[in-house]
Length: 168
Image (cartoon, rainbow, N blue to C red; front, top):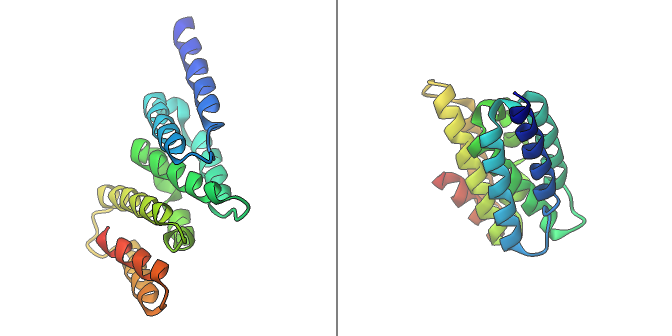
């Protein structure tokens, strides 16, 4: 039993060490760190439960809305994407928040941020389709509206973001 408690503490400690790499100026470092965070959350399972997920999603959302540094928004998207992919049970309660805030990074000036946001959108849609068996989900309707609205804005970033949303 003592060994299990130690491994849980070490897992959380490792998570905090890796999280310090986000955001980073090197995109490859951020990609590797976010994938590692997702795997740790997956392995941790119930240890990284509801309270942990609440804190991490709020922290990532703060990064997502940051305008200080270019890499912060990308880091926020990457963290959310990996948490959604690797811990969908605990992430499900945060899908509403993601859909409310996804428009800004979906129209970011950097292609890599828009593409990562589309992957986050795909992960959220996967969670919804697994949880909700309704044919007409309000989330799908909202994404279609966002896509149509973005196509009317005559900026390449908005059009590309809308096309990415339609693809997902």
